[in-house]
Image (tube, helix red, strand yellow):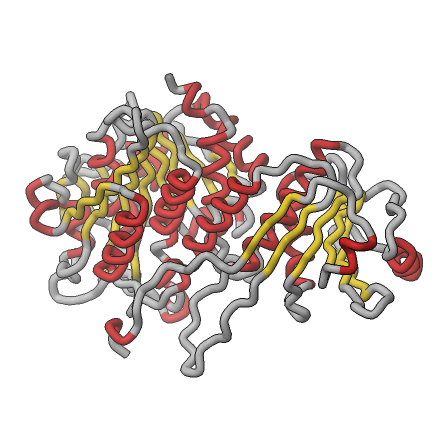
Length: 505
């Protein structure tokens, strides 16, 4: 079917309400719930409060040992037969472990689809208790966001869900809602079929979001990119040149400086055939998701706007398709990028770094303090880390610890790879300034990062996130869909909590 048969809409906010009750659960509270989610303490005897369901849960625990990261469900006695889902986390467990457990608990609710869900923790350590509750709210909020479906009969409307958080703990519910919304947007866009999410329809969808949030938006199409000398980007899009281009979004709150404090850059390849070096069927099947980096960059901008981030932010979305045809770029072509660097093309399926080269160079002209880019860039990163970690690279060795710490704190884990200069010897060209990639695939994720570094001036801090966990069968952490939206929660932690921007002053 033609793309025009389907409308490209961003997901509406689900009918979800989260309430911080601010007190312990009572029998009356329990009677009003359809389900209760309880996070206990691993490695210690379960200390159940004096609640009506405590005896039933204890009996269930004594019948069968609760495995590490295991989840147990029991219907509580009484007319309502309230479902109780419980698991245990270590007091010193990582945020990823807590999110993983919470994701499994959220999945256990799928069959009953409860409308009123209570959340509580038996953890006595205040900091660990807050992390338990945060993980549970994050998982249950992510569960509320659906992925797009195109069934002819249509899906029934989502039922209203209320989450009620019990205990005297402080949670930033506004932050958690913004994260869930951003993750939902990123997953929704990434899941859309390539005939629905084309570069042109993507641009129109972004324009709607820009109007809603008051962002300034400009689009750099072929003629504009030709004037800017963006030959690397144009080489990729010349086989499909009617739609590709770069979307530039500006968020400027009141009293913010004109110069952005951070630029978010995302690879937005709406479909990747591999070009002249055509991918085989299995490798091409899910290449409508190759725009995941742009979805993350857009979603992070949306979340920062919602949270009233006090500094200016730019987002640059490199929207294109890597198609085949008589005009397609070829191995051994030589092109010139916007910063003057000449590139010898080696493989047409290394299109992401070509698109990002010019996009990074143009983003750098605005002189942000930091550039943070996201891309589903290399299979080598997946080979190195699986889909559990993202690879992160930076031109500031002092930032490596901060980048990894943000992954640990957010539960979206990253691993900092080396960026030594001697890797550049594998990209030496006899006819141009640099090879696009090496002929073999050894350390291609590192070589791709070394290539991209050439397009960011040394005075600007830069971090590149290779999104190996963008897709994982069964989900990852608190997200239970195969498309994970990985990167939104990570970026918000990095920009809001880690102090990275203050360190760059």
